[in-house]
Length: 266
Image (tube, rainbow, N blue to C red; front, side, top):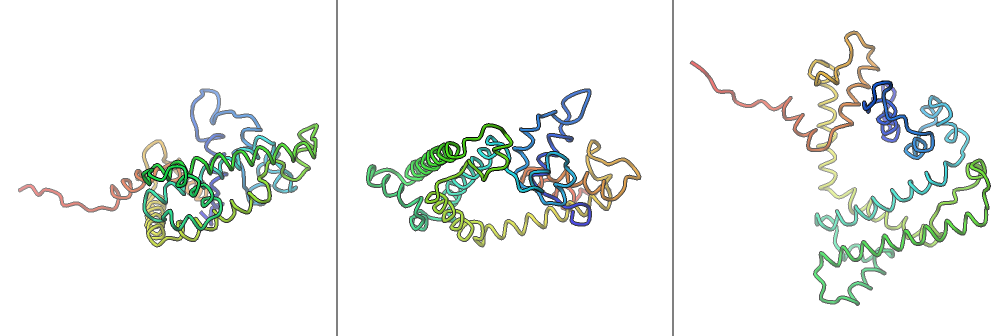
């Protein structure tokens, strides 16, 4: 999509709720309030922010979103980091021994093994992750309370003009950073994950190319109008592909590109 406006996943989420969802007779999208839409749009390039009107102003002026949006941002970070720890362990791509070098994990892993020496490893993992989440959430609440008390914001404008008030303590921020660094090195850059990423790029590239070349291959409800400009056609294709699950994308690729032997009639 580089030649047709680019692709940003947060902008795509906003596009889904603003335009692509079709639930109501009078308008497209879900008619969400400004604050909810602001919470969805956590990151945005300056070029795209300039096209979003009021919603994009904070990115251009280096202002903060609402406290609720700040909470959603860090809650998301807690969720996916700990999910990736659990997922990496269950898949065998990382081990508890490797994770024991990460301070945030090591503390809780040692506590669990000391308290429950005969616990099966699967339950050790669940108990360790549960305690990590509790520690992160508790620290986030306590540090945020201190930050809010120190700033004492009276209005939303006070929140927007202040540094981020929803935050981890400096010590916990460093531990969270170390966990993210570990996951980047040992999980996201694991050779098996890199192989799957290469396959995913191939599948998405193939699908995008074939649908751009002939949009009649798209399901009827996703086909752009005849004669539509290329950037708009490309955006329609991107909307369709971005809405796919992994399994659906693989099946769609197979349906279009796999050549299966057909029975011959005489």
